[in-house]
Image (tube, protein in one colour):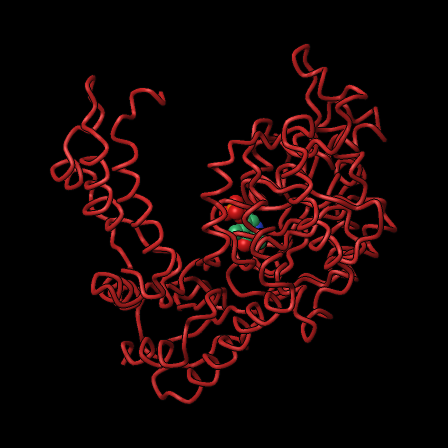
Amino acid sequence: MHNVDIDLVEMSLDVIKFAIGRISDTDPQLGFPKKAEELKALVGETITPAGIGGERAFELFRDVLVKASVSIDHPRHLAFVPASPTRSAVMFDLVTSAASVHGAFWLEGAGLIFAEMQAMEWLVKLTGMPEPAFGVFTSGGTEANLSAMVAAREHWRRLHPEMARERGIVIASNGAHSSISAMAKVIDADIHLIETEDRLAGSQLDESLSALTDEDRRRVFAVIATGGTTNSGIIDDLAGIADVCKQRKIWFHVDAAYGGAALAVKRVRHLFDGIEHADSVTIDPHKWLFSPYDCGAVIYRDPEIAKHAHAQEGSYLDIFSDEGAKGFNPSDYQVQLTRRVRGLPLWFSLAMHGTDRYEQAIDRGIELAEIAGRLITEAEHTELVREPSLSCVVFRRIGWTPQDYRNWTYKNHRDGFALVAPTKWRNPEGAETVSRFCFINPDTTEKDIADILKTMK
Ligand SMILES: *Cc1c(COP(=O)(O)O)cnc(C)c1O
């Protein structure tokens, strides 16, 4: 295609200018979605036999399409789990693409995979998992959880050949992320969710396991605890759960996709005690470790078990396991084969800023949650639903109906002011609609929080 891009140089000036402008923009437009019909009317048909030209396509991107998409790093985007990639990581995402390197096999990607591995070593060290624990970067937490579940299930079947045709069972709490149930479906496993008000305790897990029939108990191949629930930052009793899993010889996975970043913050590290006993751990650098989308990670206590489950074989792949090409092949440890070197933006940013800066920036999210907790308590019209945990704050506007929360969310979003969404909180009386902040962006200010709370008056 190189020879048809005759206007490439001219066009790329605009594109690069946009990229640099956007990377350095600390107050980007929030962005608001449009209906597909509206976009069609504005953009028309862009894929044509002759092409519409780079200039026109870029104009449509800049003037219409990107404005109808939310900037995830907006400092008042506090809904779901927002993001806040460092400038250096975003810039290096461009470089990663420009370098054109295949990230699946050492034979092709050795140098860049080596760099990824150094970033991974840091993550593994944060978990405290002993050697030879190691991991790979994935497309996100969902893929990381899937990869871990497949490794666990294959391992269980290898240890128990009589279970080869049995459906496995995964146990988690009702606070587990939706991807756990979704990935159980993908691997055709049953899932048992233990009802908990708050964090899942080891004793509750033990009781639930004891309550199963002997037959069902033999089908349990993994317990999944959450290291920071997505809704409210609750960390399960990882040490207690690890004990039960060890006693009963069940694979212990910790889904710390959102919360795992807080392992780097010394003052809260103890909340994760027990994670070092996990058989596998999920952490998403694209959530609270300031990587651009998409970048998740899965870490295994014994990577050989994962390799057994995931390494693909094929005549054209043989060379990759040849003695002469020996090295770490990321594709052997998760469900994806061809992959970009997706840990590279994290590596560059970590190398540039150092891990101390990371600890400070992550801790700022926790501080912001503490500040929000105070402001919510001080204001007459709002109250906390529970104490802030990690960087999540669940709170109530006294007297509001679910429709009030929805109208408020849309108004703030439409005004380009903020994106904060309602969520559900399970009370003894049933599910209550409340609201929630999740702080990822260290550029969010106390004033941002106060201004948002004012819009609830
Ligand atoms: C976000 C999240 C996931 C899913 O991760 P993706 O990167 O969106 O695929 C899984 N588990 C938890 C706890 C999460 O917060």
